[in-house]
Length: 259
Ligand SMILES: [Fe+2]
Ligand SMILES: [Fe+2]
Image 1 (cartoon, protein in one colour):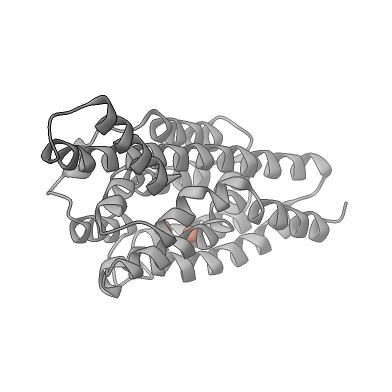
Image 2 (cartoon, protein in one colour; image 1 turned 45 degrees about the vertical axis):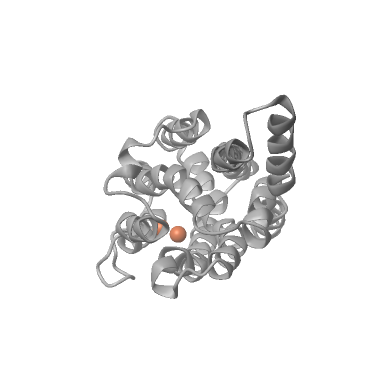
């Protein structure tokens, strides 16, 4: 298969992957009420955001030639704040978390869902222990091609519940910046893929990353569901003593609010 055909097919596969259109994204766009669900999501998501540069730094060392190193270095410069007035992306995300209602350092104290821990461990392994093109596939097609599509519904939801543009800059920045990163990446991949084995490595990394991403959204959905249930407990208690009927009603309300 020609490299250009492979890249075109892979982009389609990435954009059509179930993780990229996870139901929790539609729910955030259309049904989330207030800032609490976004805070709950963000407190889990922050660990992914804060770990991303460590994967790139691993890959920068193992990149076999200058064209891949240039792509990685350019993306790292943006991550460190080169394209956002010196504010690195983790800092931008903490600004979003405070706007959503997070307490100082809450993102460091919140218990992480196992799938969040697994996401980071998976990407560390892909970028450190696997062939270079597997890690490149995970961070390139797996991240840069999928993130703008996944962030679109989140941004719709953030605006709908009343966040200011300055508060959601992390997300809107990535809607634009990751399109550039995806184009630079495609140029680097077009030059460095030389065989069907290379294509298989890139695809394996991309699919492993997206599988971990799907589990991350599952985790976010589970945490939002727990948060919604905890929000509803006082309502159940206010309406009288806790009963089986009230508990079942609460379960139905949570289900109807989050599918
Ligand atoms: Fe970023
Ligand atoms: Fe990016």
